[in-house]
Length: 273
Image (cartoon, rainbow, N blue to C red):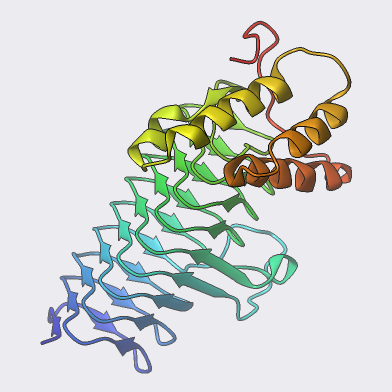
């Protein structure tokens, strides 16, 4: 049965799913939809046009769906959507979308947002993403499936983080991070592939082998300009789905170079390892 603590405030119009537990001093706005089986521990505020999927758990002092921190926001009826089985720890803040960004902020299934993480307006976060303590995403950031954003890191607005990528702790990311890549530093520099993450997630040895060779061909100093190396890798590894995913991601970044956002590259002295 649904259990709502008597000190919680549930505004008229809010939809609360079956078997959901809402703890002391929570505040739920009129346009909020909370799926079945969720747990809001205490002192959680959920406002705006916000939908939360089934079996999520939200810890104290999280602020979900409040107005974006964007001076262009004029109260438009934008949305925030959170998938199933996502865990939101203490003091996390998540803002809905804006008119300038598609009107939607989206977080997928099975994500973990640790203490103090911030997801700004119009971000698109995939499934199984982890934001470690105090990780901050600027507006319009895209984080693809299984990516990990290390603690105290900041991702600049409009940046993209590819699938299975790893951003090291205390990094400042101002460019796109390739799928399967690992970046660290201020400003973040590409430091190789996220090999540990690939192994943990069961990628076959041949896929990891292909990614290693493609990475070296792309980012180690070699002959030709970067675009030429990219097309050579695309030809040589056309049968490798992970490599072609990385190639497609890079091509999209290059196609949008006019935005001023580039691609995270290795530091000059790391030899592209």
